[in-house]
Length: 179
Image (cartoon, rainbow, N blue to C red; front, side, top):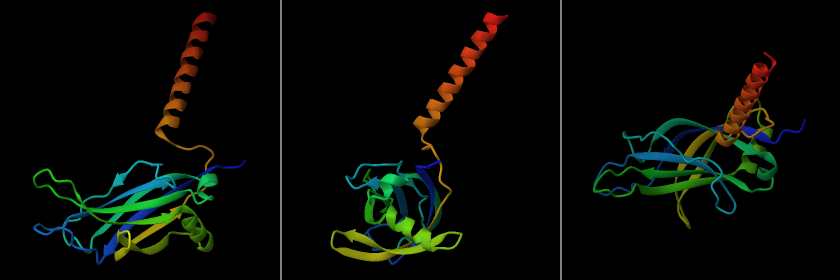
């Protein structure tokens, strides 16, 4: 049986040497993790980490997130893991401040997992703070699970649930007719 999807568990561990983007308040950094395709379409939910308040330029999160990756599309270099770093601002309704981001093609993660022994793979990537500038480093680990045949999304879970409910109703109706 050919399996089309593979679970990917990512743990955003820490960052070092991030630029200090808040000028008047302490930097309270957090990460937003998601999957993007090459056309910049969102392919997963954006999942935020907790806010790290102790040392904004060198945060530690140890935040885990899980995605289900379509292998056929990912192998064509169409998906990227994106970790966007932001600083929380709660003053005067201002939006959170952008620190930088890391983008890694899923094919790169798949290649790395093929070369590794069982267990998580630890990676450090430079943080891109502007189109031509990098400052700081993001440390994360990842592991791919065993392939699965179906993409476990809320839509598919809802479809399966509704099909089960229909089957139960039909079964109840047939039971009532037989009695």
